[in-house]
Amino acid sequence: MADLNERLCMILNQIDEQPEVSITYFQPDKKKKGGAYITVRDCVKKIDQYKRVVIMQDTTKIPIDEIIEIDGELFSSIL
Image (cartoon, rainbow, N blue to C red):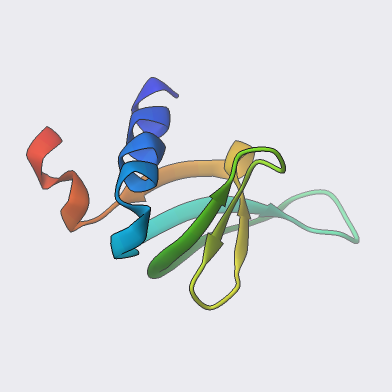
């Protein structure tokens, strides 16, 4: 969790450059138990800390609490 928070902070610090990242998150099924893991690769447009969502350039909204992995060129310095 600390690693994800650190990566979100790095994205937030460079939000003006709209960094391209790959985010994997869990999307619950609205009709039954379960769901699916989805990976989105796009530029981050905004991080709404109040609503706790990451908004991608293509308007995809990813709930921060459902994110399991964030990757991209931006993080090559922390590997």
